[in-house]
Image (cartoon, rainbow, N blue to C red; front, top):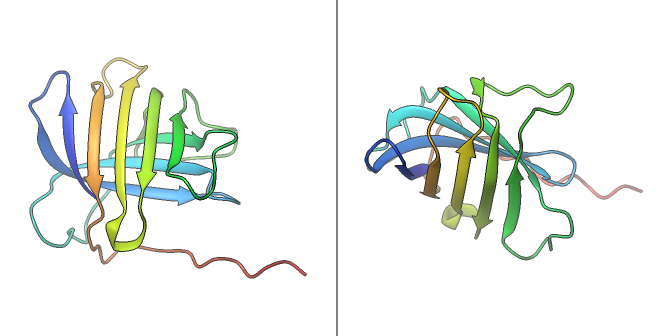
Length: 140
């Protein structure tokens, strides 16, 4: 995703982020910062996560409404992320779908020195490394 990042320390900038939604019902979401400037056009193939925050879907959230996730302070047992894990508090919200997918997030890193607080507004961009999992067939 092409993200506009507004931080407390650095000036506003555009950066490529990698957003992954996973889990049985899409209840987990990761945001990985790549540190690569997001120029117009397709995302470069060599995107690599440098720092990754993880969020879980808020309980009671409607499957039809914008998906809202709560950033978490520690990784669940048995789960790893690419890059340095960013323990955080805040939220992530997904809007729309497909080519019109958008993301908004506000977060605060709980471990000094990893990253500053952030406000992210992002839109989906074509990426050759993208993987979209198809829906599972219904159980019989």
